[in-house]
Length: 221
Image 1 (tube, rainbow, N blue to C red):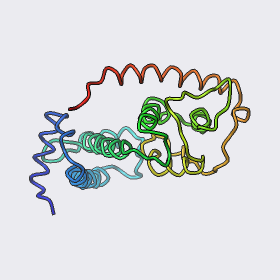
Image 2: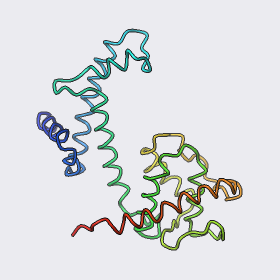
Image 3: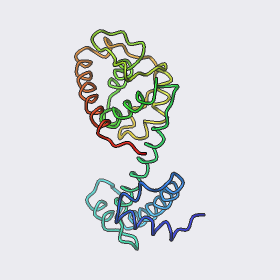
Image 4: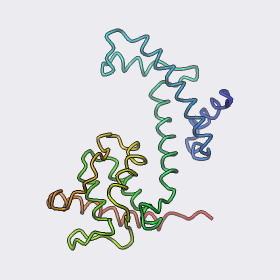
């Protein structure tokens, strides 16, 4: 059982210097997340107990009580929740950065897909973009209009991609409607050519930005 006082001090240090969060290893991140989760739950119990019935999370009264209810360190529930999400994002990114040869041709193909995910895919709310990006980057793509780059290639079946997406990427998406439940890959024609044209422009705009950022990012020794 980790020392709660130590975890409390660690969090106070992170609040003062957010970058401190990036120095924690996976175990330390997990312990801190559990610690913050318990603090968040205790705060929310107090919020709920002090909120007039019937409880309405959308009401201004509830929101004000949630903001004004603080712990001994003067942190409220939304503030702690913010750092829980930051920890989840760091841990998930560490997980996604591990190269998966069953999905991608090489590490740079995976790195590019993760960049596309972070800057575009995770913010979408429909499935067309997932089908389009997979089909465009798929090694079996023979389209002359939506041709794939030889630098970034997905080599697996759509079913395996979908299972990987649901297991690793879905939890980082604001919309849980992005779970892939059917493994029948849509063709460009089924997606619709006007939609494909729009989606193709998006990924074409992301690629040079990714290359520029990759080149300008200093490599660790």
